[in-house]
Length: 130
Image (cartoon, rainbow, N blue to C red; front, side, top):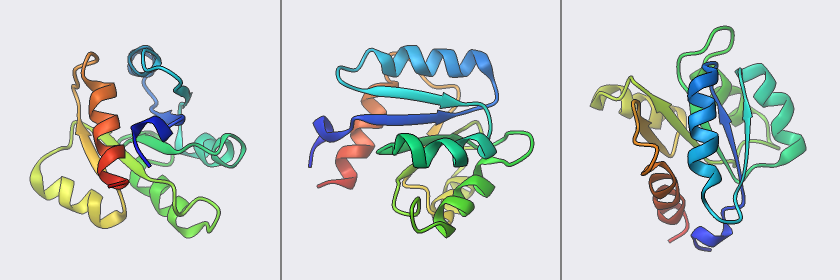
């Protein structure tokens, strides 16, 4: 597999402005369908339907936060193998280590560079499929 195999991404964030930036940023990547949700509960309903290759997940959200959403995904055999990247301002080394222990494949720090986001996401995808 290579980066060309990444076809569908789901971005989950409660901030509409950040969702818009991510959708525009990743939307520039060729042949990549980008979907978004505004909360963990909605993501858990949408994921089985759209079957994303990768989920980008905000950490701090009202209701079900990112770590809780990831735990629910890992507990569901249908969703457990989908790679998750956390996108968060909480990107200190000890926080990143905790997120990786929970099962995240990577962490992208906020604020992020919209012009570099797709490159970062594809780099993580390629690392997973080397």
